[in-house]
Image 1 (tube, helix red, strand yellow):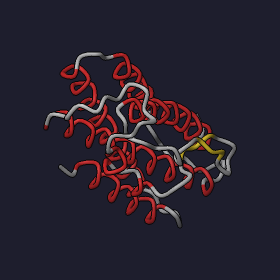
Image 2 (tube, rainbow, N blue to C red; image 1 turned 180 degrees about the vertical axis):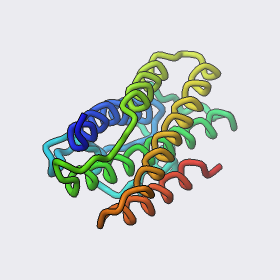
Image 3 (tube, rainbow, N blue to C red; image 1 turned 60 degrees about the horizontal axis):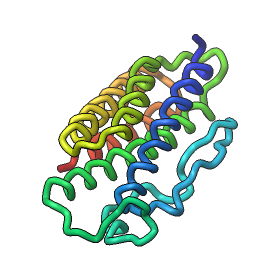
Length: 185
């Protein structure tokens, strides 16, 4: 599969995962009203109407707009889970922006290898996570989603390292920052 077509397919699956993550955030009372899917320059839907750093767990303080959110006190484990979910969503959003940048700068004959199966699996894990009613199983899926996202970013970083193109250094640095923020505890 040629470079740009592969990047578009990867973007499609990751955008679906991002949409699911946003729904999960809102379901847990973490407001993300200003984050919606917008159309990127290449025609794909991307979620970045504001800076990824703005989506924080601080916005979640007892939002009365969330349908399934009660005002009961959260346990430490629930707070940690919400924090991790926010990080995964922010990292996914940042990754989508980097991939859109790659797509904008990638010529038709230029190859940029990406693992489509990892993006499909990431999307499937996010979908499965949305179906979980048990906190423990939700957290297991969330950990798995974070691992897959880390793998996707690490593989893209490696791919950018091995390319000699104008935008690859910038992409590599952006991916390293995303990976570092994703892994913060």
